[in-house]
Image (tube, rainbow, N blue to C red; front, side, top):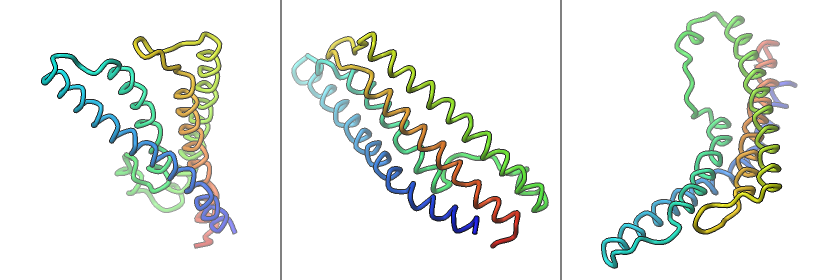
Length: 168
């Protein structure tokens, strides 16, 4: 029962994770193209592209926070499990459960603070230096990516509980 619930939750979370991951890929291509165009324009016309720094800085917010949930969903994020893998089954699953709970709680708090930060950015009307692009949507994007990653770690809990109850 718990294992099926975990698989269903992962299936539900895979679509928004794919969307944010795709946004990260688009941001990566954009960063590469913007830097290349700016360098070529500096070399050919002795004048760099105006606002490249603003665009690349904002694109990195999407690039960093976009694919995080997908990496966690697929289990391809960095994890140091060399000690955990050597433990017997019961203590290992208990520690995995504690890690999933703590990680989802910390990411949930970080999401809350990012939303509060985005609201404050909207109230103060903070913008980039050259192009005057508002920071607020990018802070909300970071909060969405972080919140989705918190949900991914929270979705691991039913699967771990199912393994503890020996459902698999």
